[in-house]
Image 1 (tube, rainbow, N blue to C red):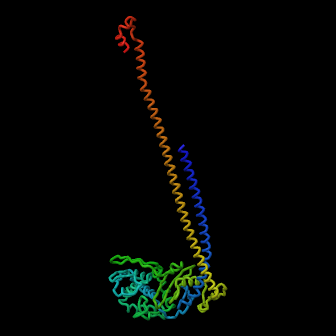
Image 2 (image 1 turned 180 degrees about the vertical axis):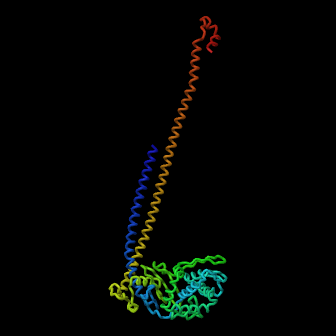
Image 3 (image 1 turned 30 degrees about the vertical axis):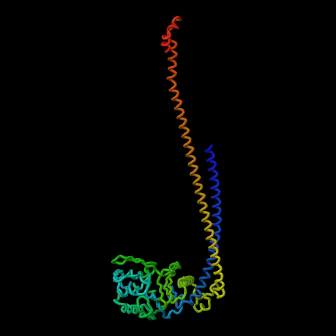
Length: 452
């Protein structure tokens, strides 16, 4: 009877746990459907917002960039250009010339002793210490990847003995490459104080880049996102990362160099390869987000949508050689797309909040489900304990039955000698001697002896 009661209680707890689990599963399914709907809506809105933002950026960016040039490598045709002969400060793009000269020196495996002069420069710096020994190829990586000024000065002093001699070699090399409107004053790209007058043009920097990418070592270094190398004496490890955010924003980008000073603004020489097209972009003195602008310009170049810089001032761009209505974007439509974008962003934020609330509700239901599962496990344990108790009681009953049987057997065994004694007494009484009647009263003692 107790066993049946326990089993019925357990079955009831299992049914309750099953109902609780089913309710939680239904709740989770409903929340998941709500979240899925929000995700689908977001996925539908996002491309429209991205398209509107891309178009707006492409319209405004051309006005906010001092000069730029876009050209496919191996082709003489310039895809897009603006003020390509305008002399401006190239900032750290200067290091491309410094690095290609170091690569062509044929001494990349040699150790370079870091001097005090090369450490006394402004950031960005790798953090070399006077007396360090760094291989020349590692200095090239530090200058190209991390734009380290101490690496550029260390290379210049090692290759030519001093900065002035190396600058003279830089200007000579620039003329040999065909950079007609460039003049360099230092190997790193500083443009103020004693290094004022470090200038170049978008066209000259494109020539320099086209020359440099023909070198396989330069190509390998220009694609790196980080440089890891070791000091040769103390074995200190340097790990330097790139400043080129275009590598994260645009999947087809493959380097090459970034630059920035207060005077030069944001500068970038970038390369992208897509659908067997290899395109170079030089951007100087950008007053806007150069990473998004570069990605937009690359996409237009790959799609053969070439904007006219003169029409950029009026807020629209056209595809050269074709009259495509979809390529014309009036200013009013741009403003309208901005409003739609803002409204879409608000809708996305609202859906995000609802999604977060749904996630919290799901977490809460998960906790409840876990608690229900724990309750089920607890009831299972109780069932198992009850079953064990029943088995134990059964064993005790069997043991008691065995003991009772043993006691009965013992009683039977003990009763057998008593029966034997009774038989003996009976036989003795039956064999007592016959006493004459006249001696019965006189011979009590003999009777007693016989009776005993």
